[in-house]
Length: 98
Image (cartoon, rainbow, N blue to C red; front, side):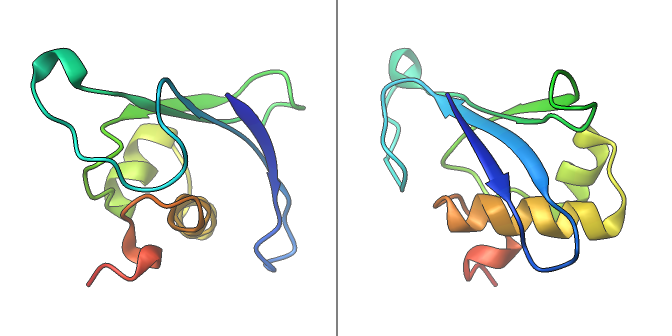
């Protein structure tokens, strides 16, 4: 798991933890149930020591509405976190997915 300070240019800095076991940043195809991986993103919005987390399939599309619901974020924060995940190689609205 790695800690990232994401500053997307909206006047906010996001303290994010992102991790998964057994794969580098970028796309990896999952085969078979035994090989299924889970990624975890935590927004440490409570002073860097606590916040909200989401576990997701790293090879599935992450819709902004899903991120917003699971992380309990407003539209601006959802957009920024989605941009971060797109930058990190996950399939979001901001990674070129149409």
